[in-house]
Image (cartoon, rainbow, N blue to C red; front, side):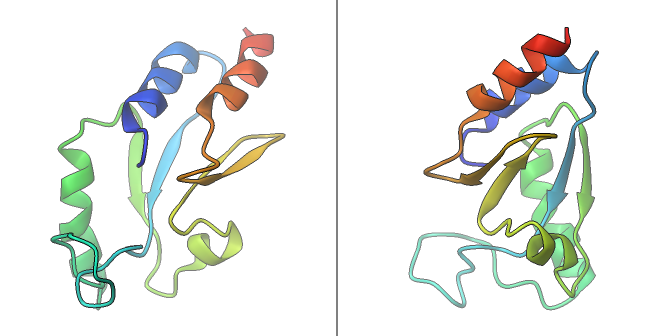
Amino acid sequence: LFKFSEFNKLVEGFNSVADFLIIYIEEAHATDEWAFKNIIKNHRNLQDRKKAAQFLLKENPLCQVVLDTMENLSSSKYAALPERLCGARRKGLGPWNYHPEDICAILEKLK
């Protein structure tokens, strides 16, 4: 996640009023498809995706992490590539229009 520390703050501050979940989707900048410096190749099977998700788990997410299907159902349904923060009322396409503070304002009203 582009601003992972901000996401963890959301989880920490609002886990009493909201459920959080990270769905690990297809790699946005796979080394075998893009020129970006990255160490993750395109996932060819669920085992590859699981192995790549280990890098995310090292960041100590404060919520459950699950894997998208190899058909990329979650990624397609929510237009998640490269990342998306979904709430009950708002969605922010990332990483440039990824604004956890918008979701924070909504969750603040639920406290």
